Image (cartoon, rainbow, N blue to C red; front, side):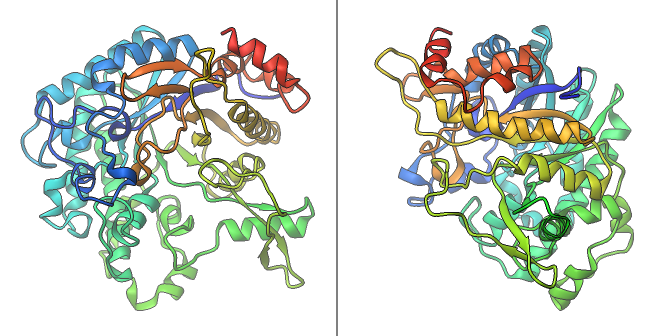
Length: 468
C-alpha cells in the first residue's frame, strides 16, 4: 500500500532560525533577540540577527525547494514582525514579507503550512507577564486573527503552536532557552493552561476569519516509547510509557488530552495536586475546539519492555549504540510506533511535522556536501513511517527538519540539520547529497526507499548524489 498518492513530502523551518533581519522594516524584538544578547546564554554567543538571511534570500530558497521537489513547506510567522509589541499596532511591512513568500511558494506549486508560533515571543509582552498573564490567550488569538485575515485567501493549512513542551519548559522552567527564566512548578502549570487556552482561541479565530476552507492542527513533541519486542505485553508497556504522566515537562498527555478530550488527565491531577491552578470550567471547552490533524515532531525514542507486572521498564541501549551529532539516540521505529500510538489514542490524521538529524557536515574538497549518515537515517525512519501507513495509520505528510542549516536555539550554529548547507559568512547555499536523495524519494512517492537501504553500496551512493 505504501504512502498515499497525495502524500505531502515537505521540509520545515521556523522564522527566528532562518529569517535574520532582526531589526529591519519595523520588526519588534522577540525574547530570542534579548536572550542572545546576554553573554553565555548561546553557544559561542551566536545570535539570529542574520541567521540564514532568508528575509532577503527567500526567492533563492524557494527556488531550491522547487529543485528538491517539495510538495509542502512548513514555515512559521514571526509574531513581533507582524505586531512589533505583541499587541496593538500592526506592521504592514511584516505582513508584506509573508505575502511575498506565500505568493512565490504557490507560484512554483509548493503548498504552505503555516505555524503561528514557533518560539519567538514578543519581548514587550514579557513586561506584561507573558504566558503567566491570563490575557495572553487573547493576545495570541488577536495575532492569529491578523495573520489569518491577511493570508487565508491563499493558505489552507494552519498550525497553532510548535512544541509547547519546549518553549515553556526550556524557557520558563529549566531556563536554558529564551527568555531564560526559572519559575515555580505551579507557575509552569499556569502557563501551560494559558498556552492551551491560546491554542483553543486561535482555532476559534482561524475558523471565524478564514477566507477559504481551512485545516487546523497542533504540533507538540511526539515523545515516543517503542517496545523492545513485538510481544503484546511489550507493546502495551510502550503505549503506557508514551502516555504516562511525569512531573517533568516532557510528557504528552498533559499537553494533548485537554485538546482532544476536554479534560486534564486524572493521573496528572493526582500527581500535581495543589500545584494545578484553578481555572474557569469553560476554559476546557475552548481548549478542546475540534482540530483536523495532529502534528508530531519525532526525532528519537526510548525502548521499553514490560516487567513481571506489565509495567514499562526502560531498556538501556547496547554499548556503542548509534547517535546523531546532537547525541540523540537513533531509533527508527519511533516513526512507526509514535504515529500508531497517537492515532489510536486521539483518532485524528497525523503529519510528521519534524524529523531529521544533526550531522557533522562540511564542504568537501570537490565543493559538495556529502552526508551519507543523514541519507541512511532518513531512509530508516521513512521505511518505518511507511510501515505505519501500511498498517492503516492515517498519515498525511512528512516534513523533514530542516530545509536549511540554521540557528539551533541555545546551540547556535553548532548543529547542522539541513538538507541545504549554509555557509554563514557568505550565505552561500549548497544542496547536500541528502537533498538529491530526498528528491528521488519525492518523485517516486517513497518507492525509492526500498532501493536505498543498508544494502546500497556506499561508493554508488557517493557517485550518484555527488553528480546531482
